[in-house]
Length: 264
Ligand code: KIV
Image 1 (tube, rainbow, N blue to C red):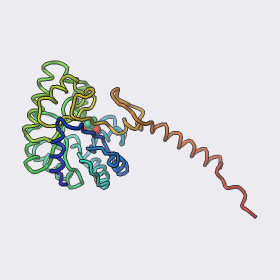
Image 2: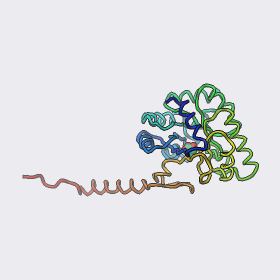
Image 3: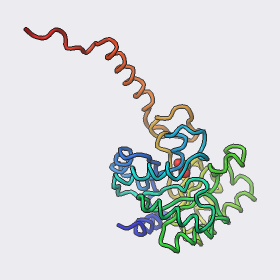
Image 4: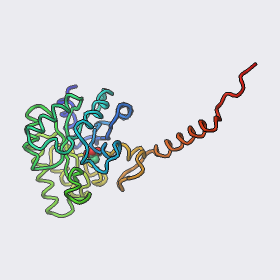
């Protein structure tokens, strides 16, 4: 299936079986998530925090994204590989096009960008060049420094109207889906009902969108130092890793697995 076929298949999920999306940043995780039936693997710039140890996504570079994207792509998943544009790699339509071509060459099947009406021209340039695009509205992590923190949006009628206008502009420009992050549930539900492409929610309430996306470390419990309030961990890998490492340290330092005296 080509990237455009996969984008069309995603678009057709509107109002149908909900879309299950997870972030992935490496080869084994991509393979395991794909084997589990995940629909979309998002190489999110959240890797800045949960893999690279930065405080937010604003220090993630194109080289970081290319490195992790290529690892995910080597898993050759059946799932649709979407890759984030890192900050300041899509400042103009031409810039977005040049960056997207590098991401697609490294294995992306769609690119994702943050923002609404102001990004429509870039989205048109990308879709016009045959590059599938996923939008991202609501709380925009790349704006965290400008906004002075992470804030839920879509709570007031003016915010809700702005989000809807942004969603409509992105749809008109040809996106195949839109992520809604930390949007008030009623607004997320309303946008979902009004636009023709699937919405994929995170922190935007239960059953308000056409699907959900989660950061994989929140699902697996492998990044315990910050867990968003809406996360639903299904495992506690942090404890499993600590315990396995402690057992290893004990075995090595105590030589407890030593085979004993050799047979005569
Ligand atoms: O980078 C990321 O993980 C994301 C999700 C939060 C949607 O953009």
